[in-house]
Each structure stands twice: as structure tokens, then as C-alpha cells.
Image 1 (cartoon, rainbow, N blue to C red):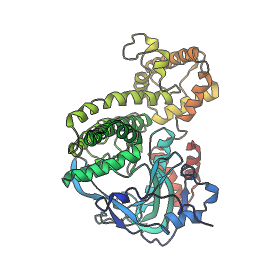
Image 2: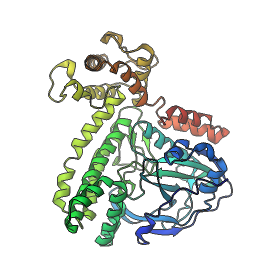
Image 3: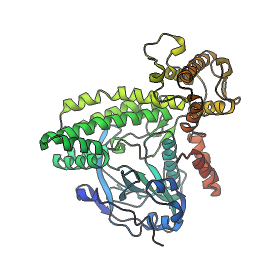
Image 4: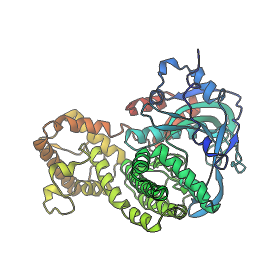
Length: 500
């Protein structure tokens, strides 16, 4: 039977930009191919019936890389921990192909661990099996929590022994394929400033707008006749929408308790999507100073600094964009970043607490102006409770969901007791304050929207994780695989996290 993975309707979009944007590379040849993970939900997103795809089909397409060419290693630059690096590019991966999903959106299939490229800088171009597992977990957890993210399509163990300074070595090897809206980065734009090539940048941005901001492309191309003014309007609209997307992305990370770890500009997507998962971590306790990367010794990319870093990266992006559009217009747009961030952060946490994203609008509360204790800011009360309680951030939301699932909605504040018995008791003052505010919001909401009686419980399940993949959880999953080749804990976590 024909391998449908090879007969997808691939488009040559980035390839069509020309060789100034990429290098043609070859895939590594591996001694072994064992499919350890396949994401059938992503197959469905690509319009493929998973029952028609065998494991051997995955190996043929994404392990042996048969039937596809050319493979493109993208070129880019980037600010890495504040220092500009003009010697970057895809060093252990390439663009496998581009295709439309069932929503009509262009998606990249990109590899990681597929061999050396001109940008490997002395590296072996490989991916550890543990690194591949971690990337799967990051993408699936964030997807469940509502963060726009890349997702892993497949992970194939490749039979090589790798040596790494941050893992016990030798360690097992793998190659993965992920789906992402684009692998073009802020650093792709920065490269054209370095080259003093505004035409190359304009060509790139027109491509990005056409494929990833179609509403901007349609609105501006049909509403204006002057070509120069049309281009300016499109680029300003692109930057405005990118600011909004990145502000919401940062809010999603913070609500999820997720620390990316390495927010260099070459790890920031021009589609405003979360991707490139290296030393990420989900926080245990509420700690804004928590860092995920052991080499982030100054805390530059700590959990609590992520919104500010995203803002600063958008500000850095203004430098190349200024070759084409007004600095004043970009500065005015960027001024809206933290307003958008705060609004979306509130919406994300509302959902995790069981409420509609627009809770305050429904029940007509302005938290910033209220002096009534019953209508005090729920989000602020939640963060005060978590910052004073020795409880895992993810456990707080999970246990709230389980409490409501087991006992139903509390009839009064006194019946909302401190979650599971095995957890440490919260500080009484902060608990009572949070409990009263949560219950008031529940009662007020139900009085206005009776259907919310069931919706609150459903929302608590939908927007929270049964097991947040903190470091100890991931290490336990890896230990079973590493020591016993036991994948049961890994697949159990995947199955309980899936929402598709």
C-alpha cells in the first residue's frame, strides 16, 4: 500500500523564497529504527486516517527519510542571553516539508536529531532519546493547557550512543519530527539586518503574512491601491498581531506554570507559537525566580521574567523591521503588550479555576476598583494563597478539580475545605480569603447563568492536568525507559493528558 505520509500535498513555500534563506542538507543514516511514539491526533489534524498508517510507514518517512527531497536547514541569527550571534541556523534538524492541515493552515514538518548541517558548529546533529521524550511531554502538556504550541508527530529510536555533558553518558539516541506553524524566527529577521538586506526581509515578511496572517493579507490587499502604502499597512498590522500573539503566549506560559528556559530571539517564532523545548521545566512551588536551565546563572530567563523577556525580544525585533516600517508605529503598538498580557493571563487562570475566561465581564466585577471583600480579585487572591502555601502549583488546580468532581459544587464557603488530606495545610487566613472569593464568584455566576453548574466541573477537567510534568515526574518516566525499557508510565501520562 502507498505510504500516505509520503503522499501528503506538500508545498514548496519556503523553498520558493530562494537559497538565500536555507541550505540543502541530507539526512543522517541510522543503524536502527524503532518507532517509540506516534501522534495519531496530529495525523488527524493533517487529514490522515491513523488506521491507514503503519509503524513501518513512520519509519520509512521519518526515520529512513525515503521519498522526500530536498531537506532545508534554515538560516538565522539571534540574541543569546543578550549577546548577538551571527553564526546560527538549523544545526541538528531540517525542514522536512510543508503541508496544509484540515483547517487550511500551512504547517511545517521539522526534524530534530536528523544529522549534521552547515550550522552544527561541531555538534553531532543528534538528539538524545530523553530529549525527544521531554519535547513530546512539553508539547502535549501545553496543548492541553491551551497554549499555542508545536507538537511531536513521531519519535524513532536510532540505535546510536551519544555523549552529553548534561546527561549520564553514553545515552540513547533518537530522531523526531514535529509539526509547527513555522520554523521562521525573530532571528531570521535579524539576519537580514546584519546583512543590510531590506529586500530580503520584505520578501520574508510578505511570505509570513500570506501564510500565517491571512486576514491581514486579505484586508490590506483589497482595501488599498497604493502598493507602497499597502505594504506599510500590512507590515504594521503584522507587527501589531505578533505583539498580541506573543503577549498571549507569555500569559499562557505563566498560567501553565511553564518555564521555557532559553528565550533567545532564535527561539521566538514569527507565528507567535511556542516551540524549541530544551531545558524547559514546570514550576513546583510558586516561585517567580525559578530557572529551568542550569546554565542560566543570572536568572535572565527565570519563570517570572518571561513576560518582560518576550517584550524585550519584540523590541529587539523592531531593529530589523525598522528597515521597512516606522519605529514610532511599532513603539506605539508594543505599548499595548502588558495590557494584552494581563487580560489573557486573567482569562487563562479563570479557566483553570473552573470559570469562564470572561468571568468578570459576566458577573460585572472590576477587580481593580472593588473594595467589597466578596468581589476582591480572584486572581490576586489565588496567587497570594499559592505564594504562602507549600503546595505544588499544578497540584493546587488538579486537587480543586478532583474536589469538585467528587463532592460537587460547595453549597457554602465552609464546605470548601483544603483539598486533599495528604497535602500540607494552607495558611488559614489566605485560604479563607481565597475560599470566600472563589465561592462568591461561583454563586454569582450560577445565579446569572444556571448552566454553569455543570460547566464549572467540565472546565476544571478540561483546563488542568491530572499530573503536571514537573522534573521529578519526567525523571521517573525516563528512569523506567532507561533502566527497564518500560514505556508504560510514559504512554499512561500521554493518554491521560490527551484532549483530542
